[in-house]
Image 1 (cartoon, rainbow, N blue to C red):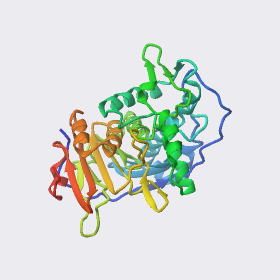
Image 2 (cartoon, one colour):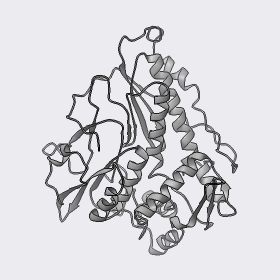
Image 3 (cartoon, rainbow, N blue to C red):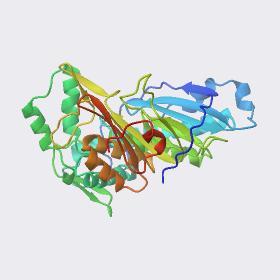
Image 4 (cartoon, one colour):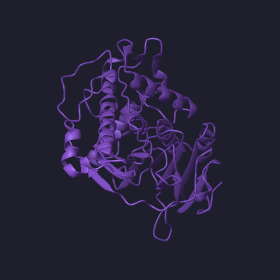
Length: 382
């Protein structure tokens, strides 16, 4: 049952800190048997401390206050909102959460040459390779969602993603031969996992893995868990519209979440929900897209034909954790509406809200478990 409650008024922010730090120096390439050591966030606690006065550190708050922190990671802006008794407590917890996110980016990044994911893509076809617990876990989860969605979700989509990134840079649509070559290297069936040895084997030497449809949700989950371990339970982690939502703010029924969709305007405002202890993810091309030959293409690619999605659409998924919500939002963006909702309904605790533009008109669809607060604002296509 999705915990949806009556809307609560927004709470004024107490302290907002935006952190802009360099990624750190690249190391020489090394294919590790265990997890690649993370790049440390240099003096993050010190930096945050400099943004606060000495009096702030000495003063203990009589009641939890709201603090926000931000740091660019994984190609997006991670934002943490939390309630803590003092700035000292808030800063300490946020520092640990961002360090955890940085550690995971070094595992899952497909941009960093020395990431564990890219190391596996280069070396994983020569022999089974030991990998970190995080990478093995997420690959195992990715195969589960690949089978569940009939391949609409596929972590091996990397070669096709690379073709479309190149198309975006040069403003030229990929050729059929180029796409066909990239598609030939795609197929989740070509990943073999051995849980006994925690090893991964890639059956093709030209495979390229892309964790973009799961890693942000997982990182948000892990950051929230880190905050909980520091005694911070009322918190929300936003990884570029991939949310891990913790316990409600003090005295409130939950966190106010605005459902972002491409049909919204002044005359048609977005709906909002009040949620707690869930993951929320939204996929669409309103913010992330490439412009090619005058056409807008989504960052999401259909593994079946290698085509980047076109047309205005929005997919929002609520699930028990951010990892699940992230993966399902991508799969439902690719699948036909009816098939996607069938997949969604098979996942315990998950719910979805779909906006599609069909024949120049907006159509709205939702799963049975999606909260009524949004359903009552729209005409539904199902």
